Image (cartoon, rainbow, N blue to C red):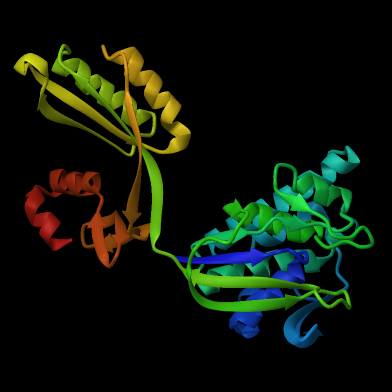
Length: 354
């Protein structure tokens, strides 16, 4: 799994994000080519090297004199030829940006100021394109060093870790805050990874540390989940089946039964439920309410995960859903079963052919 970490201790803005992506090694020409799918003229984008302390970072500059209303900004993205995924992420970021402005100005329409400029769209969409070109699966960030923040920025970072090392100027722009708080899956310390590369994006201020650091690495996917277990020797199999159904509806990752022997050699069943931490409480309530147990064993277990992607695959029998994991392609069972019924081809034959 490819992950990226943003060190935002010196702030973050749209152009700093673009600069870090280009400095990492993504050709600005590729980003520019994708941006032309917005089908709007009147802008240019360029890169240059800028001295930041004892090294150079990449500064990306967007020039435009075009201003757009909120409706026009949304329409440009929705009517573009960009991929559905890029449109979706870009619209999410814009929605957060608009929402923060409306909250600050207590109005039904965003009070855009400079945000109404076309370069806001270029910064947002360009960053989303850049991360896609990098092949980033998950993005993480440090806490945000705000400096002297704009009111809209404060709204955007509510609920997130922040700090400030100066009250003289703005370090995190509303656009930068909207992008990072929308795309990042976690904030805090840099996760463990095998380093692949890095990039430095320069900001506008003539300061030694006015840059954004982008760190990119590979990470074997591993997480922690909760294992709940109970021993049951006085319950009907029909009831156990119902318990399993309820646990899966509640979000259980897996549920299984194991035949066991309890005291006095009584045959019994061990119920095991694997579930994410956030959903544990609901699973506990189901087990207590639907079984005769008076206690539940709990343990935290680690699991290794293969990188997984779900997509549609075209076959001679039509489109089917597949999971791609570690070089393996696994078709969705329900789709194969449907095709078997429709074509009268045996299920085992279809599973070998697809």
